[in-house]
Length: 107
Image (cartoon, helix red, strand yellow):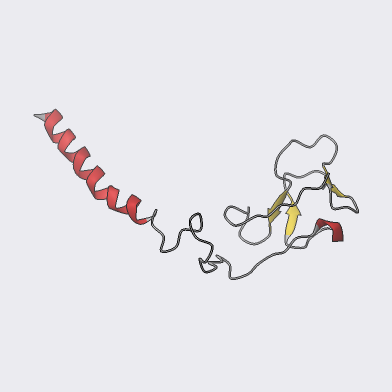
């Protein structure tokens, strides 16, 4: 009797929450399947970063310690003893979590 009640409550809870999960995974325009999706900028802005021109005001070093060096060709050189991790945090709303990041790599 007690098992059946718990099972029923669990099933009812899963059904009630499944609608929330489905509603978060839907999009009117999927950018993976179309190139005409309108821009949906979370902060209503774009930050263009070109490390060949030096440091960028929109980011700051994270984790304490010395900031990485930026060479004239834009290459980031980690600070001595730094752990391998993303070296910068966005100053707007903490870490950069979502967004389109285009990286050009030159040898």
